[in-house]
Length: 316
Image (cartoon, rainbow, N blue to C red; front, side):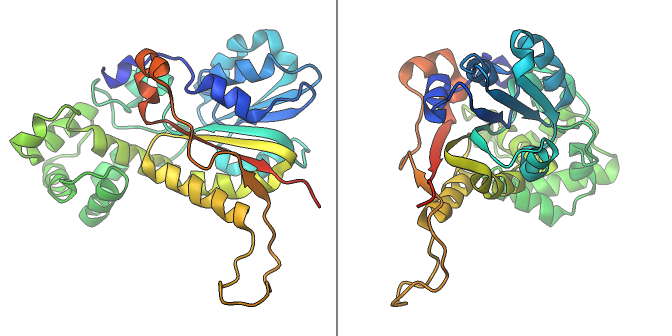
């Protein structure tokens, strides 16, 4: 299935709703509004409660006016990056919330809009910004970043085994003229790969495009900052649910939650705890929740989705 052909069903929807343990009078935050699929199901369950919907992409917020119209009195729309969680909640005068959901990665509307430059299947200017007011674009990364930095992001963020060859090919191409469009970049990537790699089932440019997109939007830095901000801002008994789509994001979420669940950071040979850190959460999921066969058949995007859930401990 092509990357632009994803269905728009929200991933792991029943599992997310169950994980959040929604109280009708509670305050909830959907940090990745997208097409509002998760948000609709959360807000439907609220009576006197409130839902804060956050997205970096103004287009998502504009579309939500219609999608969430019948519950608009319970919804607050915020144009921001979820890593600015503290500033968002402070700006709304909220100490904490009863639940937060983050569905990481690129959203279907961004992929479907060929002009945004996320897809290797449609020709468009090299953009890839989730927030179109940000300064850094894919064009800048491809044409201005040093060869070694390109190699690093292709290897680290895309797990691209031909990262050195592709980075070299990009630099040689841009010395002749700037690389302007997605399909120009696809041709450069294909030209740098051996014939055997071009015959593989996965599109040859998929890993490189993922890597550049992650770099443009600082996705991994945002996830790390979000986890560190989210746990302290949960009310006691509140739930945090995070869906990730690749191993780098999942590792950040897993390690961040494990740190908050462990508490004490003293070396194991210390006879008594001197750091005074106590566990702040309990892990509801030791292993991530993944999609069942029925969802996978309906929604191929769910194939790599992993949901991790934690609950804020009550003060003892």
